[in-house]
Length: 96
Image (cartoon, rainbow, N blue to C red; front, side, top):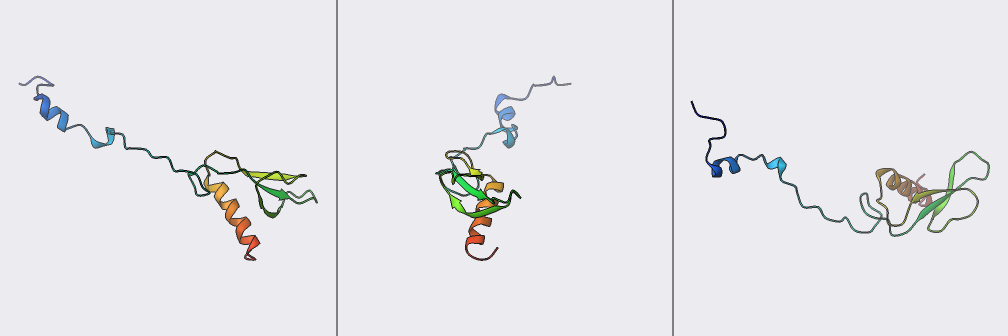
C-alpha cells in the first residue's frame, strides 16, 4: 500500500486546479461606463415641490437647492449610476 503524497513532485504540480491561478486584473480607466472611474461629479436637480422627483439635465457642479449626486469624481460607476445617467439622457432626448 502506497503512502499518501508519494506522487512524484512533477505530477503533483500538474494536478493543481486552474481556478487557484489568479487572473491578471486591468484598470477599467476613466469614463462613464460601468466599472470605470467617473471623470467628474454628476448631479441632477430635484423638483422644488418636495416630491423628490428628478428634473433637468446632468450637471457636473452642484446646481444649488435640492439635488441628487449620481457619481463622485474618481469613484467607480455602478449599474445604478449608469441607469440614472441613461434615464437623464433619454429624458433630454425626449424619449422619457
